[in-house]
Image 1 (cartoon, each protein chain N blue to C red):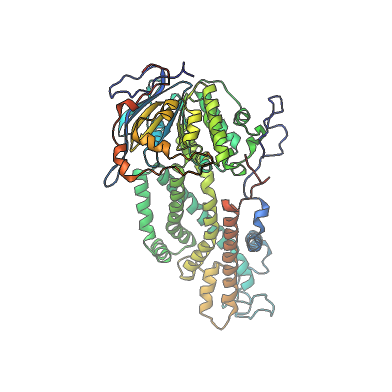
Image 2 (cartoon, rainbow over the protein chains, first blue to last red):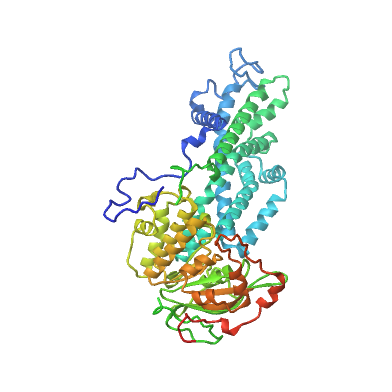
Length: 303
Length: 304
């Protein structure tokens, strides 16, 4: 850009500019091939989660097939010890696990971000209170604490989500607090304060948009962890109850019939693919949102 | 300029603020907690009038920035008062700043952290306009301000990362001036810029501030720029203002030993290849002494 001083008679700046330029998140940044692969796999699983109830070849709960049938002979993924179709159960598992994992992450983000932002922005006793609670939760190993809470609440899938929520919000609170704390004293926030704007306006308009990126990255990486945690709790008998087609409890059932490899392999692969896919998406998101990866358009900008 | 200029004589601790001064700083002390506590500003007083540009110079760590931040209210003052047009400037807290107090604005040293990376620059200048309107001033358009600081008015929709450091600093200046401040505090606004940009930005700031009949406290360690733009100069050493008064007087005939050392350290591009004298450690004790004659110095020709 050069120093062109236009006469005042020129049309206003709104007249001939194409649309608002967004600085980040253009499709070009998604060039990371793994990110695209991850996004495709995630999308496929999301579609499966939506359409599974309508397209499964068998009722996932019906026990009307020959027991422990190997894949290929009449069924795609074989049948389990109770004569249920493994393929239908794996597809139905997506309907059970993915929405719950998403719910879990969204709730963790909301709780963590709100408490973390309040903590970083208001400081003092608010900060002390929130941070000591996060310390308390984080002092325990995540899975063990979730197990204890889930066991105390009673085995059900919703209680497993609640237990996972209690152990997973503090990381968001910590992250958000750190980001807000840094931005609160930054020159541009101070400048806006000097211009007489209220704290709420500052928080929502000047701080929040600069905090969303890193939280989004953590959240996308965390969906995989959430699926693992929910499956893990179900595997331990603290989550989904039989006969629910949940991946973790399917793997758990497979342990009793170790020779029938297909019982554990396919739900295990389902967990593996979606966890890896969400991690790829998270990594790509992190790269895309990294300010250092931003290219300056119309380069050579000097005074 | 002389009709606007008021005397830079050091005010005594109990002095009544002069109505002529837009900004009156009276015996401000800034301490930083620690062991031992650090006294960054040790009783600084100054007054700046409308349309007057006052420079504050001194070495790194002498308390220039602390004083600037205490004046606008970013830093807590241990004691002393700061008044903008007679009204006390409060410390910036969680509460929103009163409209009257948006009459004091600040430009920071680092242009990269002065602007929100996720908002178009026009929106950010609009914030300044809004502050001016809230104070009952005439509304204005962000692109006019971009034009005024020498940038393309069509750039209102661009984002900060699309500008160079010097351009970002111009935008930060535009935002501050769009609030139509009565007082602009500039904390080393040119030191992050390259040499050729420094002079143009400093000159631009002076002309805009003088045009708006506002006052400006311009902090810099670039003495040659200060000589060109400041009506008066304050020299700070270890938290105290050791010499003050008309810029040209101080430049030609520095009275305080620290001012002399400071001026002797400026390289002279006369082709002789001489390196300036590095200040000697042994001289530092002499620099803390108080030279009453060095304060409130008049322009050459004016009465003492």
